Image 1 (cartoon, rainbow, N blue to C red):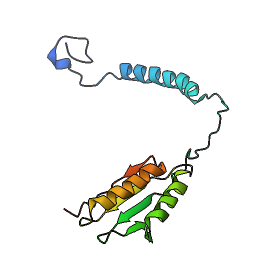
Image 2: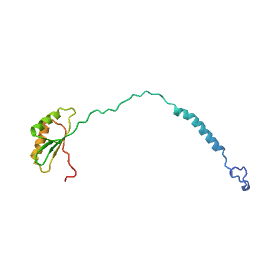
Image 3: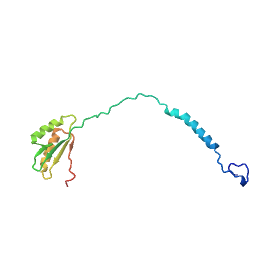
Image 4: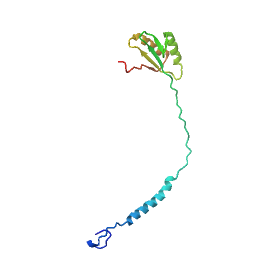
Length: 138
C-alpha cells in the first residue's frame, strides 16, 4: 500500500506527506503550553526574614616567641629577658580571646633555652601553642 493512495496499483503512487497528524500534535501542544505557562508565572509573595553575616569571634593576633643562636629571646621582633617574657605571657593569657603562641628555636641553640620558654608559656596558662617549621630548612 502506497502513501496517500487508495488503490493498490504502483502507477498511482503519490509521494505527498500527510500533514494532518502533525498539525493535530502541534495544536495539542499549543493548548497545553497555553494552559501551563500562566501557572508557572504565578508566584506567592512571602516575607522572608533578613539575616546579616557577622563574624562570631574575632581571631586574635599570634604571638611569635623566638630563641636565636645566642640564646636571646624575642617577643615578636623585640628582645626580652626571661622575667619580661613571663610577665607578657601572663598578660596575654588573660586576653579574650586568648592568642596563639608560636615558638621558634634556632638550630644551634641549646634545647634547654627552648624548654625554658615552653615552660614559661605553660606556666602562664596559654592554651594554644604551635611550633611552626620552615620548610626550606632541612
